[in-house]
Length: 181
Length: 181
Image 1 (cartoon, chains in turn red, green):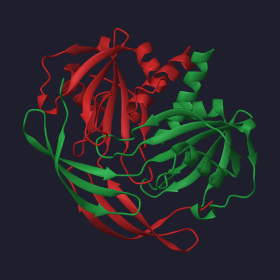
Image 2: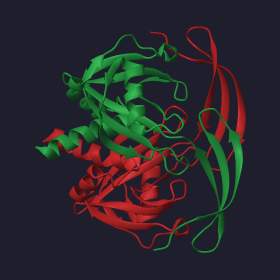
Image 3: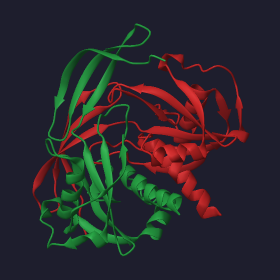
Image 4: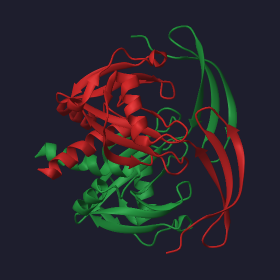
């Protein structure tokens, strides 16, 4: 089925620091026209870091929800940055642990109706990481805790973890591990 | 830890049909000030519909990624609409199946750094639904397929499903089912 939509015209409606917004006029498959509102984002990287059976979570106030959340370390890609490198950079900035390698878990489209962001998620085994000092990224007011994997899965089941990348990373890790057995 | 951020001023930067954008000036916990770019969205509802061991997926061209995706039925909340009602409405609009009840699976924050959207996800058992006719929502150019749950889990593992709500719904359903055993 040819279901593609073709861009006719694009107009920058908002220029931000975190994202931009374009309003695009598109041609639909049936020949009619429509409008697509597009949040343009450089993409993100996140890392499920497991040390001694515990997962590193960052406690962070999320202004948009007015609540504190627990999320795996993550951040925006810098210009031209490889997603795996970004994940390792964020891990070190947010937890102080340095690793050389990570394993790709999944790429997520967080909300494909209006953003083009891809969140690249990796896992890192704590045995392959070393603590290299205090967190350099103090400006973010981050707060790292280590939660046993089974407790975290229970927290996901009970609706206490809502961040999509964190839910996906934890459940994906569990699901793959079980499939390997 | 008091890590809250307090709104000082908010300015509407973009008025859209799908979302708006506010730029807020905020007071940080250390007394300094910063800016938060906020995509304002009414929220969404999604439903994992499983009939005879198969999951209903909607094939849809996603303009922002330039690809077709497979996603569970979902859509925006209408003004004042209960999320569970919205999930059942979307199920019927997109698949033609009508159900009276659904089970809450999880609420997701798709990308909490810049949107306030909550995606409310439910599951519906096909035994409690009946087909009530053709899809009324033809304007969306949707395309529904039913995929066996185990095949879908394999597709998630192999990186073939990227939509966050779909990945979370499938893995959550699997994880809860196993925890119940």
